[in-house]
Length: 213
Ligand SMILES: [Zn+2]
Image (cartoon, rainbow, N blue to C red; front, side, top):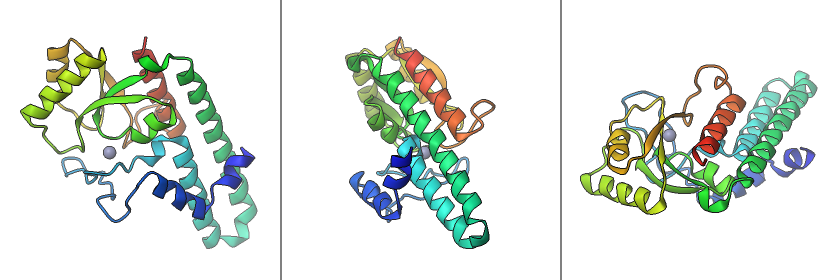
């Protein structure tokens, strides 16, 4: 915990982002508006799906709030530390959970290209995605390639995302015999218990772990 809080400051956060080849200039802004093109073609902005990435945000938010409210610095610091401790515990819990599954079984297919950071954190292979970003329609060729990848990998389930209903997954499932599993949380929270960051992350992890069995 202490290590996490001390290890990630603003300058390290930048190193982290650079290390992930994250380009802040290009298409990173993440549109929440439904129906609008989801502006992250070519880059994956979902850093928060790795708890270590979420910790970066917590540090940044705490620093910004403390700058606005210096008289409450101690309070902000303790809230930050409590949040970082919960995030570190989440990270450890997920690490242990995924490590218990044989590496060759850790494979997922998701709706959009959102789980790169999550997959890297827990050594999960992303076999494919239906679309790079919501709002896009995959070509027949792309759908065929995804179907081939799913068959080759022996994946038996594909994950939908509540925020982005899609017929593509149904088609892919019909042609591969895979089951469409509902719903991962990538860009928005859900109903309780997925109505918090920690809750959504745990819901994702338990759905993904269950899909490996
Ligand atoms: Zn997204």
